[in-house]
Length: 471
Image (cartoon, rainbow, N blue to C red):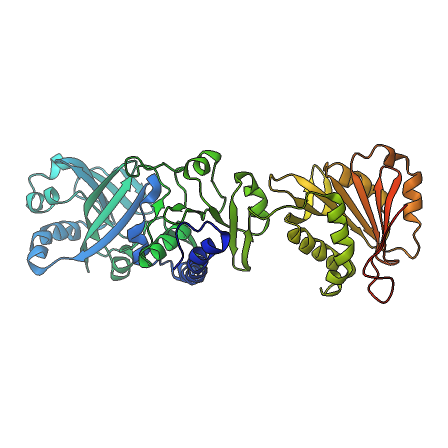
């Protein structure tokens, strides 16, 4: 059992990772069924509050024999007039009935005529004297029919519509004249807009992330506070329409939105020891400013960031670690020369306490890899060239204002260091530059146009683990 006062990242992961593993598995299965069949599990629908958006849930109930007797006069009225479509809404005896018929109805002038269909409009005041009015119209809020309704073979059901939105909720009782197929399809365990058919599949509009995770928390009996407006008195209000959960006993803040919506105020008030979100590793960069531990979950795996881990501040120590391990790490990785080195640099950055990001771009500039510090500032910018072209790398890494830039090439000779000494732009470079030649296994640390140190990446038995010489 994890102690609640244990604030280490490992203790928080023991709590949240099993929940997220289950969440990802269930979400995949539920999304697959929802897209194929347009159905969402009823237990999720029952959790849904709609987040203030208008939604409608419907339930169908067949009439008993005794109830059908009160509907019979209305069905006869429709049959006698060849009425094929009907709709209407009533409120305290006020409303109307609109019908469409294949033939003219008596001497009454139709409201419209289109493709041999006559449309008529009946205010309720005109049907109050009919036998079906008291037993039928006054007991319902409206009526409607499906496109396939046949008055010669009528089917009618009691349709309950539970509508909510804008802070209110109400139930409408409707008479639904329909065919068997539409009677079955009319009953929904979800919002009318929860799933929408598009071609052969359904688009799912439900907040599945929030509903699935909340359902898991309930099953596991884990206390949580949900990110929605109108919470309990004294509870901090989260942004509206969000999928944010706070596990207060464990000090874990979970944001399962497609676009994380956490803000500084939320984090400042709750002071979580771990923030959880969905996405890829780059999400960690976006959340660094919150100064706490981070866990990013995805189908590919989990990416954790330990905020308490120290960052190597010394450029000299950083360089020593790079030249001492880079070649070995690259040899352990599969792929081409470029990708192997980038992955090796990523590993080195993590070991030194940084947050690496591959293929960083900004304002049209692009570098192969950067290392962020705990404040989200780029401390190291890295470029790997397998075919020369190192001069442009001076500019692209310079623009990111790092403390150290690294340029790695594959050259048969160490001609680049000599060229860097003569390169006029090096006079103004404000940071140190580490040049590495993976072919000759030599590295050079520059401060402007001066070589501070030369390193050897050669392994033991060749020239030692690595040697450094002050130049």
